[in-house]
Amino acid sequence: MGAEAQRIHDDIAEGRLVIHLHADDGQNTVAVGSYTTGVQRHVHLHSENHVRQVTMTYESETEAIAEFQRLYSVVVRPGPAPLTELERTVRQVLAVKQPAEHVEAATPVTEPPAAGPGEHETFLRNLLEESPQWERYRPFDETTIAVHESLAVRAEFDHEARHRTDVAWTIAEYDSPVGERLWHSTITAGTPVPLIHTILHHLDGPAPVPLGEAHEILQAARWHPTSHPARTSWTATDRTITFEHSSHATADRWVMYGGENLDHAAWTIRLSAGANTDLLAELASTALALAPSPTPVPASRATPIARVPTAAPQPQARRR
Image (cartoon, rainbow, N blue to C red; front, side, top):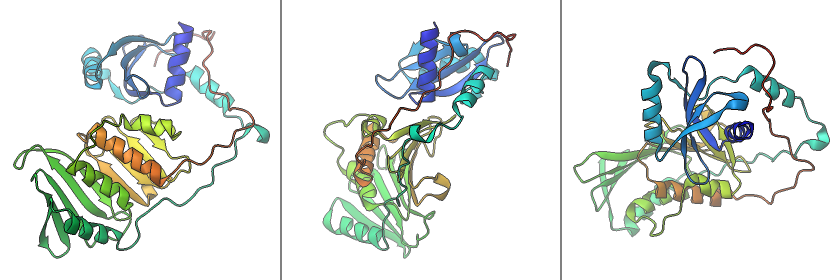
């Protein structure tokens, strides 16, 4: 059981297993999470440290979370449980600064790709002039709405958007010309045009061959995964673009942004729940072209990964 617990710990620490919710059932810590790599699995976990184990697997995230909430009701809490005393001790030991010869050279920070002044205006003009399936509708001087011939897709462009936080585009897809909205996206003024083109091109004609999952594409390109209590992110090797997934968010289920920090991003693309897998994969592929991976430089020695000891700690057991 210790080996299984170690694998679970490593999967969580390295972002392969994202914990959605946790609870204390009165005697043990329990949790529900989803694997982000390989064959998608959604699991219930029981206990902690060297005795943590998978108790149930599910085909869908929705089913796993719904059953977890049914079982543990009012004691359910968002995200992973706080670190145990043993886990904190291990991380403190490994947080000691490594000798200089063991540390990998830091990747130099470069400016994220961004659209220049007038690029969005030019893109919109070319779209309407060269793509007859898109028709212009302009209710106000400062706003243009492009409507697709299907009448189920609308793209609104704000000509007054200038600042990096200003929303320049709002794109939405509906299940029919008079039906409910399936999903929507907001895009700020500095967003590179190829990413906007990718979204509109997908809505005009989705890729004939499925491209797979976005996280698989980014992982294959060696983007760095990071697991947070409520989200998982993948960051380009040059740290210029990040693609983030918040499994419980509705309006901002997926966020792509330029720069190292979302609070000071050069631009952002936010997609609501409902954005389909192929669109996300196409956006990931376009992002790879905008932030190509440099030739990796081998480190002199690999940095150790925190490991949970297989023996239980001697002090009296505690309850959280």
